Image (spheres, rainbow, N blue to C red):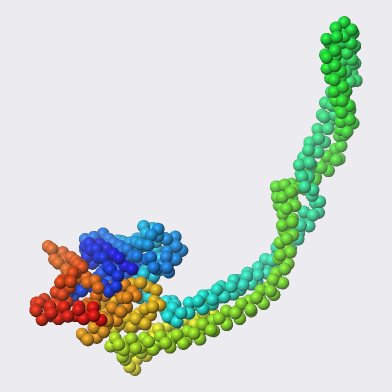
Length: 562
């Protein structure tokens, strides 16, 4: 529901704030006071196109702000959440600024949005009927949705959509298979070559690390042998070696023990040291015997290292990585080789999915045809009640077609809906969007909205001069229709007819005044006595008579009884 509208520097309006209520809000005032300017400002905040000519003379920009209660608007709440604009409460704040340079700035809940997003949000908030473009019933994408809502076919449509999504997913997988056929053969050849190359190397996990150690030992074999031999000689074989000297020290300690037994622990430590050195000597001898300088083997190991390094440049930084890559591409070859089998399975699955979605779509089509007839009949009666008995209304359900003009299935079914109108006898049926805007168009929309009152999800309807071209008695009929519609929707109506204004639950008076050389638009919510005077003015002109005042009072009273 629209709660508040603020307009700054728009046409005649310098700074205006309007509060709206639930039910039937009416705007009245003299011609040229700015009533339709207010409707135009509403169109801007809902995403309509703008030109710099709308900016009040002398201002650099115009700004429109509006607040909406969206507590019951689940469709819009989902859209806002999808766009990352989900409100923390139930109030949505919209703002649009149009600068003299032609730039637009749009905000939703203080977040910058595109004009397209603003339009999408507006489509869920308001239908504006009259001289403006923001009419959801004129948008072809909405007409099928409205028909489905009216016929309670939404669940059937969802089932078709889900089945269609499943079909498109399978078709996409098959298309991807065909697209990758040549690449698939190329990759199979490539992977097989790579596996053969890795296998031929007969790699072992950790081999690259062991190889580095072996090469290091062979490359330093002479140096190692010399160092080990020196240590062995000094420890054991050389005259005056460490072990021979320790043996003499041991003899001296044994002699000393005969004199002083306190040296026994020291002698024991020496024995332990001699044993450890003998073990070291034994190990050095064994190690010395194993150290062999073998240039041929070194060359062989270096060649092996070069081979592994070449493979590392292709398949991984370690032997372990290369072996993992080999296993990975082996699985990929298996997967790619199954493509033919997968293709056959997908073709079969697509045929089954297509049969499923077509069955559901055909049932939906039959239900839509019945619903369209019912909607046509009810709308025709409403239009007759609204003084448009000669207008012919028809819903055309035509097949959806592709770029070549061939029928095609879509996520919404097999057809599209087009609402057609013939304004006068003998004239061809034409789409709603091609019918001239104005009071007649507004009444057509009122008739449709009256039929769709229970299924229409848009909370606020705005009728700009819906009374154009009708008489007083018909204005009363229109008033009754709008009053009934206001029990399901918030209504904002701009009118010149007192018979229509009498039905309003909230009456806003628009006026203009001149200060100096500038004109200003003003608005005021009327109390009961003020309403009587305004409706009396609408009945009889600026001079208020007792008769016109009484007539105005009776109009308000009778509308309340209705």
